[in-house]
Length: 394
Image (tube, rainbow, N blue to C red):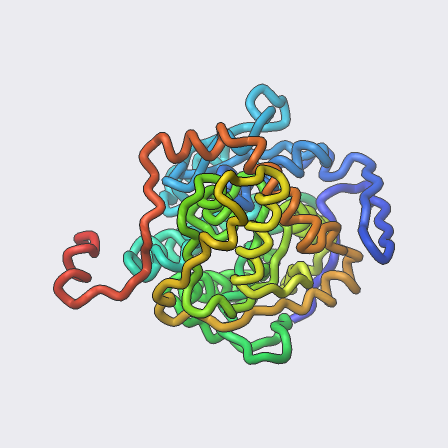
């Protein structure tokens, strides 16, 4: 359903695009607006917070439960910024959310709070159901309550932006790409939970007229990425001279999106997107997992040569993930055409920036390892006996 367009500020920004990049000439972007960013201490959420604090005049309220993958150190300079506030809270707690809505009176919600690691969802799907489905429901309910009480002018400007994944669409063959009209076909507990949350957001728009938008993105990468994910894990293992495990034959394809480009896309959708619409966000950078790991090896060899020779020797192939989707690819032409967004980084430029960041900012990820994080292999199907012993009690 096509809805009304509109921004959060009375002053419109001036957007222009070239063949290689888009830029923003900002005139008080989101000036006077308060934006809730849930999951703002996570990987993508922290990129959104950094972007808003740097490139807008919004007041940003970061709402995060601070689970294992959250890290306030991913927000340098935020503490002490008069436009920033942090609230430790779980989006499943309705009473606490209600107090925060009443306290800050937000003009928009950007929902990035989610459990997102597929392997963890295989071992323990319960937390994914709770956070991604029940949490989204609870947040929608409290946003609806808040929105209904707003004066007419503020109610017209309010937005609820739900950030989701391309994994809800399932797996592609060798050709084609996901569009906003692709049928949902999730294949993991994680993607199924995100698909459910997407449907809830749509339903709250259609049933209650809450002004919502949804984005579905491809695989993100960049600085401040928790080291359980492929790219940061391979960089860290390559630096340590440890085996670099690749699932299956390494030919699974992902469309890679630099996280800073994603953050800019999200603020643009929030500001200029049409209510009720969905926008795909992708980097137009399809690469096999093996190619990604080989590229990391070659970059590390160039930036910090190892004493024992080229790092490609560290690559090993391990048992594939159950239900491992073969290929993802995003068609972001709607976002590019209607809102003028363009990814500034291609894979080659973005991955080099990322590798260099992990080489230069070792203290950030070494602190995570020092807190006891163990990058053990997850997501292997257990026998019925061992599976039940690993599931949390209900």
